[in-house]
Image (cartoon, rainbow, N blue to C red; front, side, top):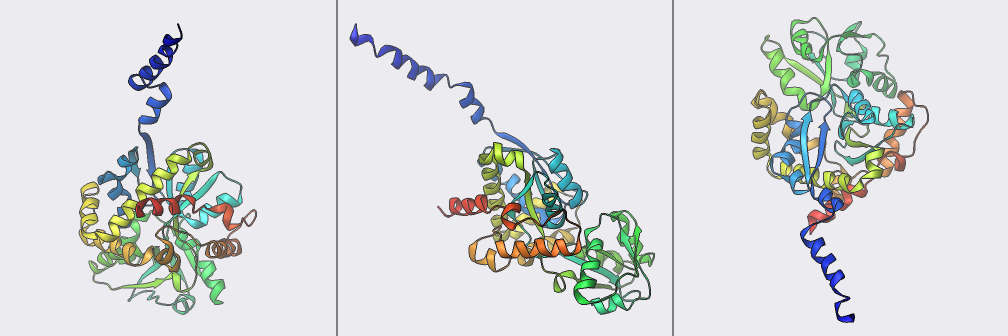
Length: 345
């Protein structure tokens, strides 16, 4: 009888090989995810669509259901916390505000290494090139929604430079209306990321006017946008987070190395985009927005603890926080560093 004792074991091995368990079959199925961006989609968002188009997400067993345009970073952070999307791309200010309020969200990959906000005026109107020009205005109408981060940032610029910017009045207008209103002189200024400069320039030039700009990063220094996830996803499925970060890093690196191809991919998914705007916003991201000493030395998407703590302290100074969180609590480099090691193999 002993010689037949191995038969049940052999049968189990055969069953495992040809009829995998439910859990094994489940693991083979791709994870369906949604991505929520910060604002209207343009060339700066190319890495997401490149990773989708080139199959980098599929390679990591991820099925992207949709990449949604955002309604502002505040809204993106709120929706990630609410579970309305899986991965979010948002500005650091609302992320830190949420973390300070003990909301379940965390940064898992850096992206913009500095502040991208830029103020737009016209030469024949406000003509603001520096914070001194801004402070010298007797009155000024800033066009945008109340949640406009570039507007919310003006008091910080004023305080950091010792200038009184209290005369700037917010005029609540929809983002899509700002360029036309600025061109007609119905508002004096508007703000958005410098990746959007071409759209504003073209709009005011059609009205025979000249665009004038003021970059915020000469007055305030902190991290811009990053990738965030809900803490529940981070804790329950870190493998999915790792695969997502690896795929997005592949998309980011491909975009940097092949910007012309990335441009065409963007136009495939967003055919309504102005070609010049698409090109310029993508190149502004590739050349400037994603680089600092840390990303140059340690890799794209890697965050520096000291710089993040300085960012948090700056936000705490000019925005109301319930507490000042430690940098190590707000983000992790675990996934992006692992992604770089994986790509280096």
